[in-house]
Amino acid sequence: MKRHLFLLAALGVFLLAALGVFSPETSIAQNIAQGGSDLAYCTQLYDLAVRYRGRQINGESKPDPDMIVALEQCKHGNADAGIATLAQRLRSADVTVPPR
Figure 1 (cartoon, helix red, strand yellow):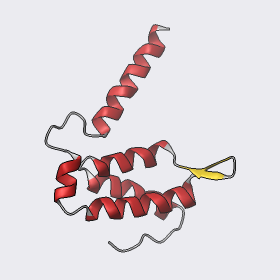
Figure 2: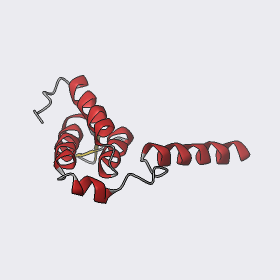
Figure 3: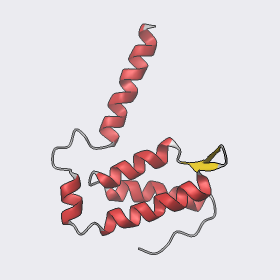
């Protein structure tokens, strides 16, 4: 039981770190101030990734955890990492990544 709680806590810390929660200089406001073009491109890649690489559940494509984390990275000012993850997911499915 203690091991499960430890693993769950470790996963939570990892996800928070991956989302940039521990970086006070990152924020959605900063991303919006940059024009939001990175976020728009990231959202476009996310939509394509869900369409072509998503999990089929009850006839609908659903994002996998990597896709969700990548989109959250984009939303929180780490667009380069999020875009790289989503672009890699598309390339691995032989989907052409749209130009930026």
